[in-house]
Length: 90
Image (tube, rainbow, N blue to C red; front, top):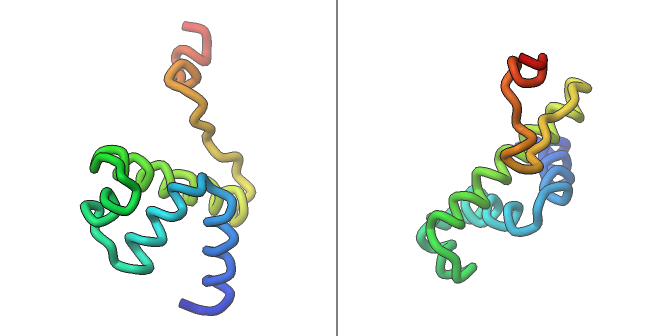
């Protein structure tokens, strides 16, 4: 990884949920399996996977915002996610 890319990734990891960032770092940088991370966090495997998936989503949104200027999708709860028909008032 280039130095600039490394800096961008570290900056992005500081912008997301700290536990999700730690799970991503442990899994990708240090090579821990999800099962090993469950022991480190004292959380269930499904919770660890949730932190991983949420972190990946937050990183994707960060890069969309930084690299393309597009507005990211916000996850504030299941009620806020609307289909196109709902948002159009159908």
